[in-house]
Length: 305
Length: 248
Picture: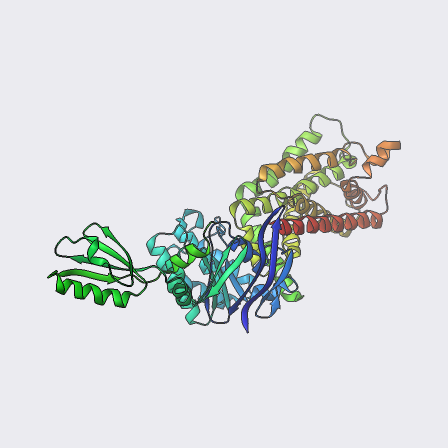
């Protein structure tokens, strides 16, 4: 069963269509990335999936339960970290987590034990009795995550959870996402950070101008747009561009003391460069092939946004 | 709908509101000092019949305490960005509305009960029916807490906008409620005008409970308060649902 099955979601705000016929299926147990430029419709889609916004058309099911028809049951199955959503600053870290746990019906003993465990995991045990209003942004975000996972949700939805965080907080958040996934939670993650999506997600949807433009695994997406690879090479002596005229090499550009050799066949280019070095009595100081990037795919798919 | 989850969500929202918004030193102190100031304003230096005017004073107390904080909760939570998180929890709009209503009603009953007990001891007030008085406290608190919830519903994350609206609605309701001029002394269009304020019926109930005489029968006052409460709740639901459609 899909953890999330959204079908033809549509939402307009006045004359502006924010989301147009968005359909996504998030397989149970996966980490699913939802990428798109600013204003593409990511947050609007997430709000419809979490019952915060009523769609104009379409439906969303959480583990088979329609979020509009039976919101209480659907929401019990998920933990949500909204974009910019925060916790109550007039409560302590512990009080925030315990209050959230009550919404999910955890008994008092489980609430306390689970809260202690999560606070320890997120490095906040020492601050558990401090008011959240005294916390930094990173600490608030960690409390927000603690609240979202207090009931060990089968589905965790995170809307840009690492935006604006320092390296330490960001790492803790990512570790927690991985840990939740290892424990069986399905993760839906929106992010601007392409590298984050690349390393975390098993499947990605890219949304642009309110429409899903592609859904695939990061590796397949990268390969689809693997058209501009290059070899970076440095020799012990200066060389001219004429040296790199060969079949398969599209162009060569100097970059400081290195050359970028653009090719559609890196293997062939490397062999050619090695043979040239031998023939011209040049020593190769360094050589590296570029990998296709998800960023490349993202930029291509959302060009003009 | 799973009623167990629904009732739990109401109770947790009530607890959240009590803890974050009502059980604050300044709020409780204001809640207790406000009646004292109002009492002094109402009675000191004026040759008023205490028995005749006390039900009006009590009604005004309950009206203010039950409807004072409620209008600010939702706009405040929208501004603090906690509202979106709340809506994404296992709650529905009705949970939020009734949870907000219950918190306001509990606060209204608690403060007004303390004020009444103090006044009863100091002023030797008459009491015709303790049961009717208790029902009046509870029903009145629920009605005016529901008004507070309705006032919290318009789309805004600016509490000061709601405070303006709240004053604009609540003050006229007091002036046309027969607090300052007893209902029995009003005739013609003035009497008709007082019938438009739900506070009129609560004050009338207090008259029945304390003095044993009232203009309307108690069941009629109660019926009106219940009807008005339902109208406030339904209107709040419609407006807040529209907010969810518009994007909060």
